[in-house]
Image (cartoon, rainbow, N blue to C red; front, side):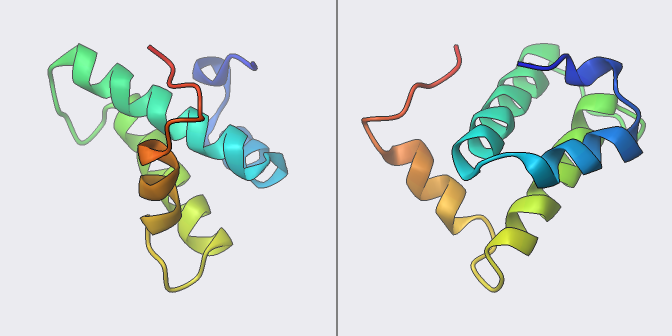
Length: 83
């Protein structure tokens, strides 16, 4: 997997568009875990900014469904959760 921490927000957003649904969902799960591990929330936090960009990409890909496809993916027993 690409080191998304090294990408600018523009490069990151562009990379999201090229991902498969599963790759996008895996990235979102990873970002959520990183955010929880940091234990801090700051409006300038890079992880939170990338979560927002990823959420937007999911919502564009699944119009009107918000994050429901991601939540359903997370609840499936057959996906590999990044831990």
